[in-house]
Image (cartoon, rainbow, N blue to C red; front, top):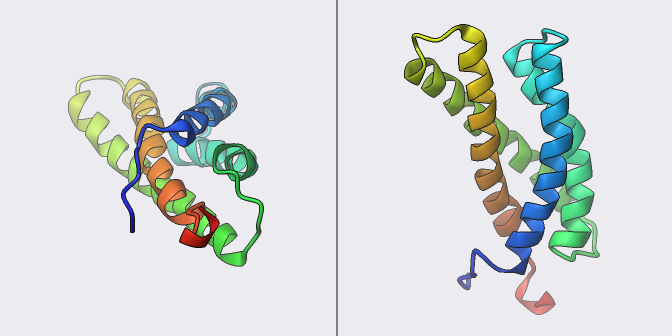
Length: 140
């Protein structure tokens, strides 16, 4: 596989899509957690379930300029989202529980939600770019 520049136009378009998703998803996640009193996992998962659909279409067409459809693309997108989510939020909660161990649970879990969002973005970008929306040599 040929090396790619991480900080190219695709990266910046991905960040733009991420900003839209972050605004929508953060509102969903923090309102569910802090206002509706849903738990950590349900609040964070709801964010990614709702915004992943939007993300798929924006990244497919706007960020990576893909026109074709395939079962592989859809399955790998779902798997990348799930993998990124489980890794990011699975790491964030124990880290924030340790770092903020003297803080109330609400503070620790809000911090973990924020940290999870950041980790998710990086892991997800690499998965989307290198697996889901990777163009074959013949398409470049």
